[in-house]
Image (cartoon, rainbow, N blue to C red; front, side, top):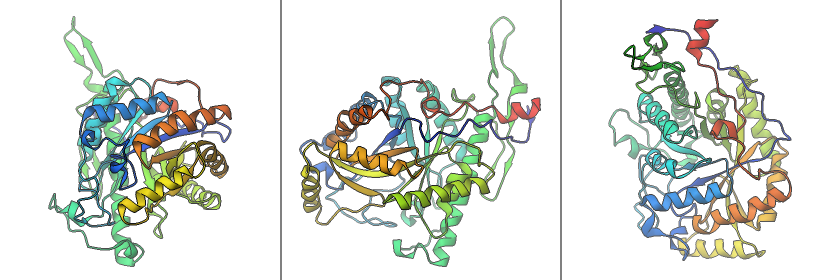
Length: 420
């Protein structure tokens, strides 16, 4: 096996502003409203079954969506930002997102599958292998959403680091800001290790020649020799290079005083999810991420920016707002979110998406307020409206997630270095 210095994959052309809109949904339990599980259309008894998740992803694929993300964490859901809340009137508990995606993959054929993983307490070697396996199981439709965890209770599951206790209001204080910046720096190294491990097997490293008895070409396996502040990883992977070469890496980037989330997108991601509440804010966010790309030396790399919105959709004007009010009453307080909350009709949402898109966003990730109601409203109401406006696909045009996103399959950095 040989060692080589990494080289950047050949960039594809950046997505053009006139390109068709990209659309994804974020799946989380019964929906993003904490009282969603109490709606008549919800299926609370099915939340921990494979059939439930298969039904959701199949519905999303019926709507020709680019991909679904599947939420996950290393602690129970909470109404508090950085600590458990002890509530028993909201959904608590999850199935593992990567395993959900692997179960659903053989039952779907085109839609991308993007499970969430927590970089803060997991090992990049394990995740690189898991996502590469998902890419094989799905025949090239895997992605990954990398998130960080500042929660003290989650750190206590592992006992390897101490995390200071803080509130959401403390995020911009110097000590907490420094800790958060460290989490994002660690996540950047995490993603770099994962990407190198995916490239540690060249394409065609598996010979599988029975007549000669050669199964692999050892010259096409590479040590990655990563040495950094947070990880020391020798490599190579034990899983051959994924079908996509590099499954898309996605990151949620909240605005913050430190700028660390935008920096992570600019440095490491293929897709960044951002949460602007209006068009002016969206322009500022797009500019900040593009500046972070340039700082990272990736100005020419295609990086999609998806706007996140929580959606409550109904055909009748006012019905969605009334439904949200009813859910708020059940929850005991008004629902709020880091993302903009939309209530209205599919046509009104299409108007908003077109307006926000003018800021430079290339797509949107919609969070259904109530999955059983709002996911079909997206696939059977919003999608046809976008198609009528000629800004969304009428059929799947590619068989891989990178293909759907207009991202070229990157060259292997180690093979490219050897051939240079």
